[in-house]
Length: 127
Picture 1 (cartoon, rainbow, N blue to C red):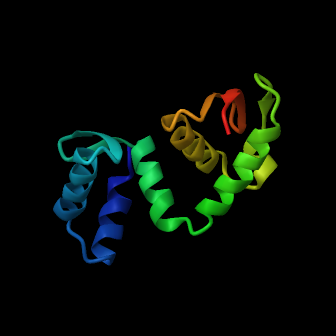
Picture 2 (cartoon, rainbow, N blue to C red):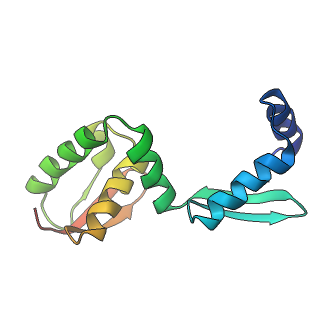
């Protein structure tokens, strides 16, 4: 559960009412950018979806093309079915690496699975 006392104070400091904040989350959920479970106007679960993560990355990560290029270079050399810490390999967060891999998987360029916190197993890559 979110700390609603701290949340209310933060919203007030930013000039937002709780209803405006909650309405914004509902809109993000309707656009499938977040998963949210709420009870009595209190948020019990809030998480970015892959769509939401990709929307964030494409809008706010100026280095997205560079990260993608570095990842593609590594994928070109990877041995299939061996777990690799790709985030460390390309100096990017595992969450961003996963977002790029999901995008590539959607384009049918890669089949992968996540192994642990930072490692990924590349089953197939067609580059």
